[in-house]
Image (cartoon, rainbow, N blue to C red; front, side, top):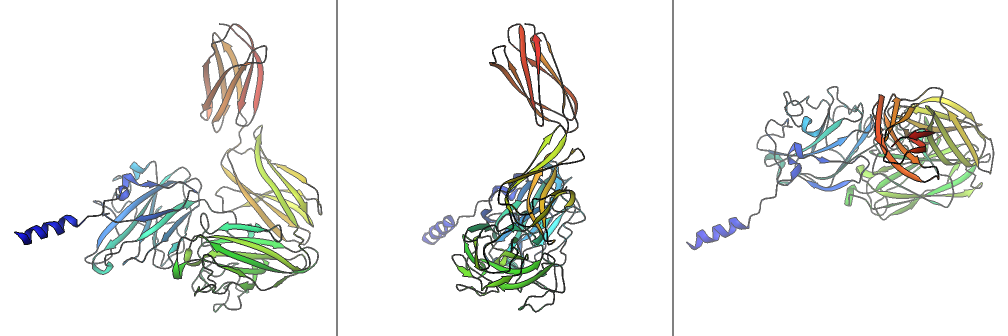
Length: 538
């Protein structure tokens, strides 16, 4: 009896891990686009659902999975997955979609249909094109802890499901993956041509390897270290011809500055903080180049610092300063920052001029766009310019691939504020992305920020009054919103009404509980405002 009681006590002390809510596909955790990295995720207590498409981890392995979802806001998006422990078997990451909703995706017509709802078509080990022909994506997190693939070909507004699978028992042992996850739109400074400008010396510029940064280096014998698509440039410590850095790249961000009419000597201070990972796989790395985006010549790369062992590794809490490097007259330097092993860290950069003076060619203070009578007007302003020739306005439908749509002559050299604008020659009836570049007198091109613009469409309003009512008819290709304001003869606002409308022709009948008389009607649309006098009969 005593032995039985002891056995029951032991059994009662064993607590099974609660099954996570997102073990069920229909309870997929929604990921807000460009939201914070969601850390502390795990599969404790999870299992596989009936008819779930799975990865075979081998005999004796019990599978487990958790689900996430996101709604695509543009055609290309970055998936961030950072493994924070060492599981017995690596995580398998699959993306399915597009679906009309999470429920539709989790049905037999979606992910749980045969065969596997359109099984994942690509594997990290064998293919660098992350978007499968069947509309799905598959990655095995068997290398660096941080994985940041660019998902392409997405349907804007479509719902996508992310399934993270692990295994325990058998050859996987008892440890399931722990991880952080998020989705983001591609960062504007994720490539050399779109590098963010460093426009002052002695000033701290802050950045992060977290968010919309992805691996856009080219596979060239391993490590994706070819950053300029040029076999003619090879870094001094690189083993493989054509590589520009000797470390594996994962989530790249770029910065640039240019010398003026005189050559100069510079150095860069680089500090890392607040990393997700710790230990041997933590930190960030930096390299500095001169040349052009298509011909990068490395002049310095961070050495393993503050106890870091890997190539270029600068752990959290560490600060390194580059050796002095020269930038020729009218030449430019480029800096790339990458999360070591795919880590997500904050960092800072301070540029110091050693010789030649801190003359940085152009400082952009504003770039925006607005719709005026169905036409898109891009506006920008500069605080100063040095040897600028002309500006280039570029357009993209997916936020990644841009083409020029117009040019505007620049001021040349100026120390006073300048304003510019460009009017698109065609109406814009779609969501599009615009960015601004500047070409200097020596042919160097610098690219600034990217903005997203909702479609422009000339709204046509017709309004009239009837008994105790205001009628507003609107014609538009893309739909939108307007506000109705009614003022009395003394100029006092007596009524407001917010209205939305679908594409095509629509009419709203708005009650107007006012006295008989003449009123001033104002209709404020997304892109224009119309005003008129009307007579309302009570």
